[in-house]
Amino acid sequence: MDLTLHVWRQNGPDDKGRFETLPARDISEHMSFLEMLDVVNENLIKDGKEPIAFDHDCREGICGTCGLMINGVPHGPLNLTTACQIHMRHLKGAREIWIEPWRAKAFPVIKDLVVDRSAMDRIIEAGGYVSIRTGSAADANATPIEKMDVDMAMDSAICIGCGACIAACPNASSMLFTAAKVAHLGRLPQGQPERYERVLEMVRVQDEEGFGNCTNHGACQNACPKGISVDVIARLNRDLVKAAITQKPYEISAV
Image (cartoon, rainbow, N blue to C red; front, side, top):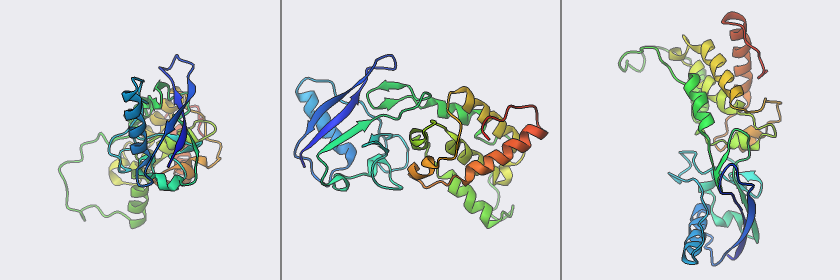
């Protein structure tokens, strides 16, 4: 495959940035998308040019690091797939490919395709954990949990924190990410003591970080590589209303 890449190049958050047109020649259709970028970078280095900066780690669709917009779509053309799992055969017939970083106020560009996603970490730090002493590992059947609750908790826990939902949302909202973390813990007995404090604090930090509000476009659900449903947002909103009434005064901006 011989391709023309239009890659976003930006030296830092204060740089204006621009698209740079680069050739990608003799690319095997069996390469992954990131392997193709590796080949392009090798050629750039040989020519004495600056390689493209992009995030990657496991390259197995687990870590959530490989956040890229491929032809305007988070993670590329396949559903339920991360960018590192895209192979060039999935783009067969393409002659030009546009590659950009996540676009969100809360995701400042570090360099080229790499963005700072630490705002998501700060949402987790605000309440995405269980701090109470739960003791050592108990017998699996010691605390009976409804199968529906277990299944829905696991459906939420599968979030890999990649940020595709935020990149896809026209408001750059992190509601699907935050709601997945809230629903994951709120469905389990260990998460109940801090359930309402958790939702208040996580939504507060979400607002402070500059993420937009949810307006029910549903683009986040479509972009999520793990298929997390917007149903978790409805659950978060219900918990948020109850928490605001029963816990402490709070401006409910997420509803």
